[in-house]
Image (cartoon, rainbow over the protein chains, first blue to last red):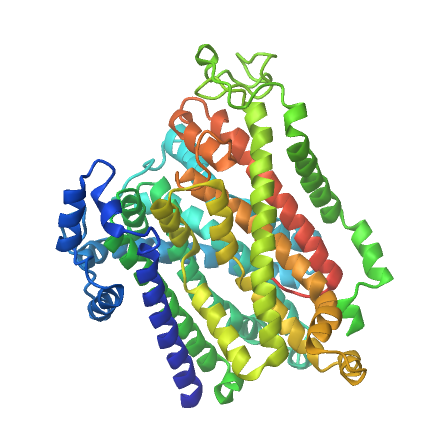
Length: 305
Length: 289
């Protein structure tokens, strides 16, 4: 168990370092950063001033190591545009993105688990096929388009919810639904296949033979086993959802880190872009680690691996 | 094993009966042909601006004109013609991305699955690292830094979407590695390269085809999302995502402007996914993750 977790932890740290390096390289893609920051109307003198001010005249490896040591301590420098520390910006925007992600995941689980279980119990009936159809529709739905449709329908035509912006709980409903939609198909398919496998196993037959009630068999024996992969995928799915929140936050003008990144990309504010990529990647790495841990706790067979 | 890897006759019959496959093939086939024939079947030049004819509704709606089947956009460009050229963009992005990411992912995955040990550790590490990178964000950042273009979208998506190819190629290669016919090839004196290309690759190809459909659907959706956010295919190219972005300002007054390109996008992706699902059923394996 300890060995298994240590191994996973080592991999996670190595991946984190790789992502740190990649997010540094990302901003050097354009060649001369100073020219990009200065903008098209800048003179050669302006560019030189910027190069001095941001330390871009130092050798690249010095810049890299300097950035790395600061980033490890949570210092991502100053934003070029917002006149604030990048860490402050992210600190104030991250709660919005995390709240949205958790709402999306919660909604997705509420829909996906029951539907997945029903589909498995009624395998190969019209119920099963309708549930799989829902999964297909969810997979094919462009999230930004669904967002716009909800804005027109729920926001304008029915006047139920605010169309866009950042604010109280009502502002999270539509983005939450859109985000949930993107996670429902895979969670549902996984629940269904896990349940089908569990229901066809020997211990279920034994439970039936013992005369246990149908509900007890489904919940205690079936779902408990089917839930193992679902729980671990749910954690990973949350990571994907946070990464994908940039589209949804931009559509609904929610000022989370995704929106911050989008704003910063269009304003050439590289330290912010770099930091958002890094923070989202680190959250994902942490969530995968958590998922491995959950797996080990829930499924004793994995502890010796 | 052979039934799982190679579709038998029973599987083919099941496939023929599969309505999903038929619908999927119909959708993707139609879009493909329309995309190829675009210059010959469009009634208007998709780039021709006509400010006197702005936002005419589709012909089947009130106020529509028979001259413009799906109406016109905010610059008076024929919506139907732009939609048809948009099919071209989606198809090219989908296919080119799948070829790029398929080559990368398959190579990495086969190497990991075949050699195992240290090589496989590196492969697993690459896959883990790739999965931790937020795709949309990085694609947007790269487009923002280098300036968005059609080629850049293909390259960025191709370089980012190889993970599932690698996962599937790796696990299927691992299953095959120890089988008798591979050992037989070794005994017959085949080189490593020949075993990989002649024995392994053809037998994992169907599994990779399933992944290819999933990735193609994903690439089409991602291109639309990037273009929607203004950092994908640049205007005035009629990418469906860009059409939705341009129509967004008018959607509260004339909702059909976002419905037309959105439905096209939805139907195409649905078609590609239906094909993928039918292929997967035929193989009888679950590759959903």
